[in-house]
Image (tube, rainbow, N blue to C red; front, side, top):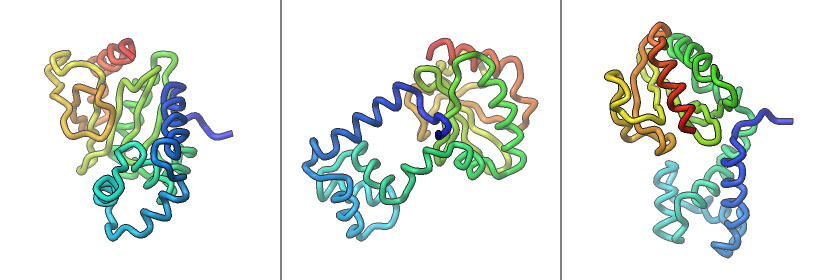
Length: 190
């Protein structure tokens, strides 16, 4: 049995998106994959725009089709593989491991893996982290930026819009009592 990589709420949402693709668009996933194979674009964002511009396929269904085409939908079944591929730099991996231990300290925490970041959820996502060049880590939290002087507004991040604040961590020692308290506050709100 695959390791859980989605909360119950996320599983229901994805199942709804998948179930509604043919109903909402009149085409099955296989028909959409055949269409996108004809796309002249190679980048995912460009392909998504092409699907929208040429077929009216919006973000959620477009990503469903592109994930099916690339095999990314199967990658979600193996969070350990995603995490190993994401956290390859030894310095950022060390920060990630310290952060993971702190994020999992409260009960009822599910670590979820994505291609570009790792997240922690209760019922909904309360924190996420992605590696940054130079052996650093960007942490996003479901708290407001005014919760700590260490936090800034979370802008242009691919994780949940619930994560309103972020901070750059450059060492495992920066995953300290203050970061643990911020994680706990974010967890309590999830």
